[in-house]
Length: 310
Image (tube, rainbow, N blue to C red; front, side, top):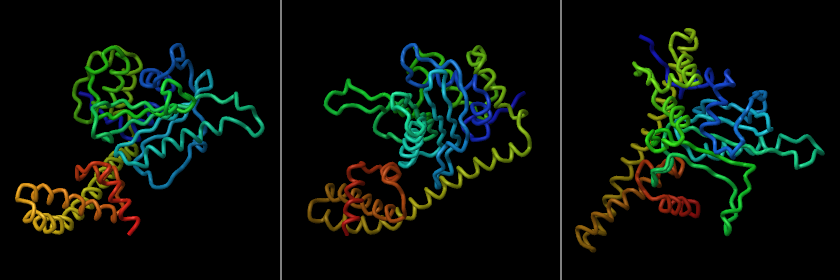
């Protein structure tokens, strides 16, 4: 029985999409919001030195930049743990790719559209069920008017449900492959194997296709991911412990004056606010704090603003 590796890891993802243009072409055609009649016909990888390096993004899995026959540029990135900075990183990389198309003195009409694709192994939008997020530059008052030269797409893999987009079968199958395949997989769905490109991707995910060094790198990657998550959780628990006593005391004092029920609710809110201040001081992003303590982003942003003015 074959054993498989998770394609969300850097070693596997790069082997599949960083070394096989045919597979990347099929994947991008399925996932990106390309204009009608504008599917990718061919791909070439740009030199690695053109991918902007930004320190502090250790959990980004892969940066694949490629162009199609029409000159469009694609940046494919994989990220396991969502952070606020990832959106800026992808925007920075996509913008840099757009700017670097021209040599000094060349005409701006030579510029081609650039797409940035972020595949996320965690959830960043806690308020909505949508898992596919497409961003363009839109006129604030006339939203039907767009500047489409710079586009970002974020796919939240944990939210992805196959039944939600049956009308785009290839997209569903590719995202199922990315989302579902891992070391626990014992049987490959027949519909995956019916698509030659996905069948090849499955074969490239078989453990037997990797050298001992690659397998060691695979295990090290997941060890790093676990360590990163543990450190984040430890920061949260530390802030939670410090803020709990402070918030409880404040909440009880207010509860005596306003009534037990109202005071209890007030105490919970105050405890969360106190906890948020502690986590802000420990360097967590606003999005991470909002998710961890289930506090509305408006409240977190207000607390951050108050902290800056103190």
